[in-house]
Image (cartoon, rainbow over all chains, first blue to last red; front, side, top):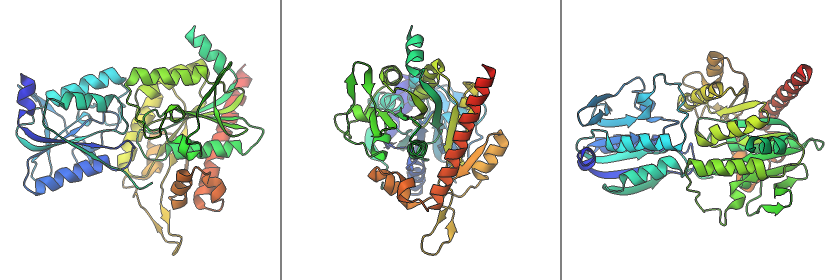
Amino acid sequence: LAERTNLAGVRHIVLVLSGKGGVGKSTISTELALALRSAGRRVGILDVDLCGPSIPRMLRVQDSAVHQCDSGWVPVFVGQDKAIALMSIGFLLERPDDAVVWRGPKKNALIKQFVTDVAWGDLDFLIVDTPPGTSDEHISTVEALRPYQLLGAILVTTPQ
Amino acid sequence: AEAAELRARLRAVRHTVLVLSGKGGVGKSTFSALLAHGLAADETKQVALLDIDICGPSIPKMMGLEGEQVHQSGSGWSPVYVEENLGVMSVGFLLSSPDDAVIWRGPKKNGLIKQFLRDVDWGEVDYLIVDTPPGTSDEHLSIVQYLSATHIDGAVIVTTPQEVSLQDVRKEINFCRKVKLPIIGVVENMSGFVCPKCKNESQIFPPTTGGAEKMCQNLNVSLLGKVPLDPQIGKSCDRGQSFLAEAPESPATLSYRSIIQRIQEYCEQHHFQEEKIM
C-alpha cells in the first residue's frame, strides 16, 4: 500500500534512455527537469545509474545525504528554488569514489526500492535517468514502473 | 573443473590487458580497436581482441567485421580474423541482425563471457585485449574472476577530461584496487581539439577539476597519455578502418602510438619480472 501512496501523486513518468554511453542522457535529464521546472511544473528526477550516478554533481548536491520518513526516503530538493526532487544512489555512498560493485540481483533490489520507497509527493513529471545498455537496471525499472503512468521514453544519441 | 578448463584454454595467452572506464562513451572500444591494430602491426605477434560489451558491442563495426558470423570447429569457436595475426570475438557476431537488442540480466551475460573464454579457440596469443562496457558490474566482476585462471597484466582506464567522467573513473580505479587488478595507467581521450583550418586549440571538454593529470597525481596512477579529438577518428570507426593507418600524421595517432608503446613496455617488463621470479 505504501507503493500506491508514493507514486500515486506522479502524473507522468518519462524514461531517458540510450543504448550508448556518454551521449548525454544525464545532461538531457537534468536540463529537461530544469526546463520543466522553469515552465512551472512540479518535477522529480530518479537516477537509476547505480555504477555511474552523474545527476547529483550536475545539480551541485553531490555532498547531500538522504533521510527517511514514515513513507520512505525523502528526496533531496535541488534547483534554484529547491523545488526539484532528486533521488540517486550517489546519495547513499559513504565516499563519492566508492565503486558500487554489484551484480544484477542486488542492483534490481535497490531499483525496486527506489521506485517504490521514495516519498515523491505530487509531481507533474518524474524523469528517470538510466545507465547505458539494455540490462538489469532497464528491465527492473520498466517492470517496477509498469503499474504507473509511464508516459514513454526519450532516446538520446550522438550522430556517429 | 571449470577453472581447469579455463586455465587450459588460456595457457597459450602471454599478456592480457583489460580496457575499462567507469564512464560510457569515452573511447574504450575505439582505444581497444587501435591498441589491437597497433600491436598487430608487428606481424610476429598474435593479437586477440575480445569484446565483452554484450549490450552495446562496438568492436565488430570498428574492425570492419559487421555481418561476420562465428564458425564452430572441433577445437571450439573460431575468432573472426581481421588480419592473419589479429582475431576478434564479440556478441555482435552472434546476432542475426545488428539492431537486435540483447536484453539479458547479469547471470546470462556472465554465462556468455565464460563461453567466450572457454570455447573460443584463440590459439597461441601474445596479447589478449578485452574491451568492456561502462560500469563496475557483472561483466567486470566476471571477467576478473574468470581470467584469474590466467594472469591479467593490468587494466588501461580510459577517461575524458571533465569531472563528470572523472568521478566515474575514480570508482573504476577503486574497483581495480578492490579486486587487486593492477592498473597499467589512464588514457585521457578527447583532450583538446585542434582546428584543421586555423590550428587553434579548444577544450571541448574543459578539465574543470584538473583533468586526468590531477586525478592520476592524486590517486598515484600513471597517466599514459592524452589523445586529442580528431573527427577522423569517429569516421574511421564508423567505416571499420584503422584510424592509425588512415591518418598517420594526426597528433591523435602520435599520441595513440606513444601510449601503445608504453603499454607494450609495461607488459614486457612485467613478463620479464615474472620469469625472473620463476
